[in-house]
Length: 68
Image 1: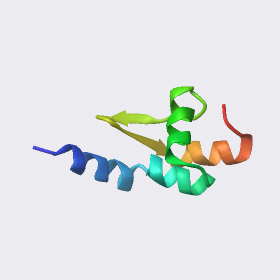
Image 2 (image 1 turned 90 degrees about the vertical axis):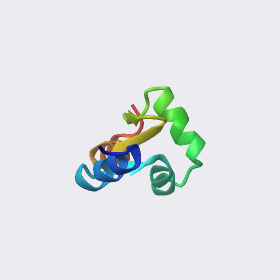
Image 3 (image 1 turned 120 degrees about the vertical axis):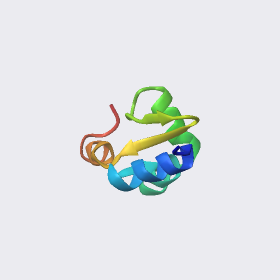
């Protein structure tokens, strides 16, 4: 049986995904700002339990094109 923590770690490692905290550090904003972006649909994220993960490709998209 896989735990939620194990699943999150595997997703982050295998799928090149970042946590909300990591995304906040990349864009130099507060983690709550990233949560608002996700809630407003400005950045795509995958929800796993109560956590959100953002694919590296989405981060690159936002860097190039800005928020959706």
